[in-house]
Length: 587
Image 1 (cartoon, rainbow, N blue to C red):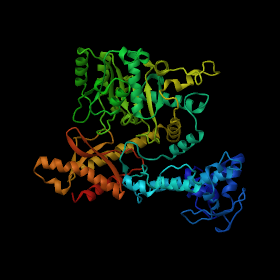
Image 2: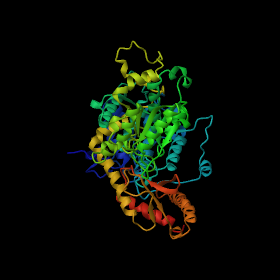
Image 3: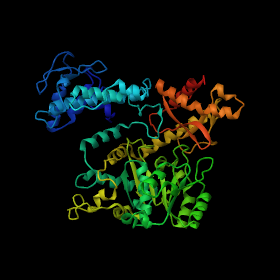
Image 4: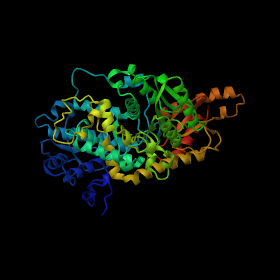
């Protein structure tokens, strides 16, 4: 019989006696305990009193450690036993590695898991708030967030856990549309828990053997999907797309002027980089961090849909050369942050090849469309790039953070970036280890300590397959098209640009009745500029939904709807439209 998934583990044990539902977190935890082998299984079973469920709910039960058990406090009627531990008398020093700390540790962690499971279930409940909003000064006063010299009890720690989640934004909520990263994948969450349990560093194979190999395997697969022959090349996971973009700029500079590593920018001529006026701010921030300077980033004009204009790119490259500057880097964007535009990569690649300039593609937002046979054409030409940023924590809904820089074979990262960033610290990267040293990836990175970001993506890929990610991405794009079709001709709405959006970004103005019929255009724009901020503030105060807004160039504030949450449905899109109209009707 096929498995029904996470919450049905142990269902065969629960069925028939009617004592508890296998869908409750406590029942799942008890069933899970039975699945363990060896000592840990027997300890978990003893602590949770598995097999005692047929006893009366209020009957105390002796656990292996001598503590009594009481009813578990599940939301649903059940007879789950629960070890009666008084956390108000316990401190972190009573947990492992303390002697006899294993039982107390199991009970404490079980309480934390219960808190998290309750939050997860609530996050997917549309009747709950997306946000319990409070102003900063109010939230500071509502709870004691200060740090003290003396330790707090474990009961206080559990209270802090509950309070933190109470005021957290439910980014998994089907009606949370505020950022590019939304949703909560259960396999990805499990992988994140496991990663924290392993608590290791990605700098060498000797301390992270499995994770290093999974990074190698996954990056190769991603390069294959980009279209680089046999997946050759290299790459690295980094702390977000901004750092991945900076790595690309760093490599481009090192390829042209390697002496900068030792002698600094004074050893190089005036370098200039090029990017679209709609590109992410991280390109300028990277130039500032690398000492190139924000004034050395030349912004190229975009068309009305937000795509870079290739003719303007070439014109500005020629102008820079005539001034004696050295063009070294072009960053094209696959999925701009606001409009969701895809720059014409093929034409940009032709220009970069002609002028011998490193071509980078910032696909942090739109790169995941490569997983979709229906939509990957929007990135035609990406295979000609020297490097690409790809953030699976956006459209693939991998838990934050998960960002990769991928580099093509011709400018192989493993040789070039090792030289670019290598410091050969002999206490980490000894040259006489017994294994292939190419798996010691730490010297490629600017960081020393590097978090394990790979396992979430790898485990989700195993669980979904490429076709699962494809279906998830296609669904989000279908929802965005549904929203566009519903509002493009609807009274009170005006699109920021004409035509169906290329990504899930749907940009629009809502014109309330008090603004809709104004004839004075200056006054109309002045009042319209205030509409989106007011409606957004009301969304947050009611807690019903969240969607972002911003101005762009000479355009006043408009809503930027993005969809990356696999839990969202057509009904949620309908709700958003109705809620905007409800909250803005008096403006």
